[in-house]
Length: 414
Image (cartoon, rainbow, N blue to C red):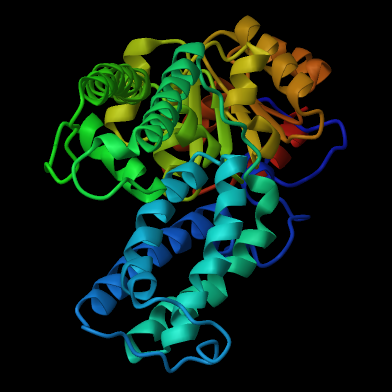
């Protein structure tokens, strides 16, 4: 059996060093409960509580104003009644953005959450207590994890054009309707009436409360219908299409960008082979991990088993960056190709020079090469298997030996 120690000749086992390093910061469990994932879940909880509180306010003919801010703020009853529901819809979109670690979503949440706190502080009813308590916990946690929400919004030219078209049609319709305000039934349109008219016209609802009375106004309303429905249709295709592609990618064992951004303090497994197969069975329940492999069949099978999989070249630095190797707890390399594993070690070291790397060498003669290119710990599974077989023959039983014991045995044999 040949098991080679790291260059610093540490006595602790290779895998134990990766997954349970002695120099880790204590209270890891507390960090897990106060990280980015917990922040997203709390914002989602605030969204739900805001919706429920809004429904409660809507059920009251006249909302009570018993909060400490009621003496300083004179909010219209309509704002108090509908505010919670409106904020819930806005925070729903923010929650999706936070899940994808978008910076703009963090900034929006930083504005919306304190403003939302004004509502329960104005009414201060029994049903407002859960929302207020959730806000008191969520806002500090959001600020604490601000560095985790660093992803920019990457929109394609088609998406930018479609959103711009919708905004342009809305602006055109609002200004035009107000300019023609005297050519509709009833009183002349206000700016609020103009916005209302544009929305119901684009949605082809047409309640009939504002009807054009001149040919010019009718042609104007027709143009809003044509331009508005066209822009809306293109926008839906441009924005929903990537979501459908993401679902298809997940079905084929490919992690989406939003899934990758959620990874933190995880283990990156580069390559897939017999060694990594048994490793995944042993460690899947103990720590969060992601497997990087370019074998699509293996990726699909691993995804079906509930494992995180990124389909890509494990020797490609950009793929390793997508796997968030820089924030990983450690890296395990152990496919059935030593030459390819050497390239994977070099790529991992290039992405993060300080990450802990444990590798499995198929051939004992390649152990030193793995160390040379940057592996911290290298194990030769075949040598370990041979040692266990010899003990089984000589002792009659297979000893329950730890990796450190096997290391000491190999040193004595050398």
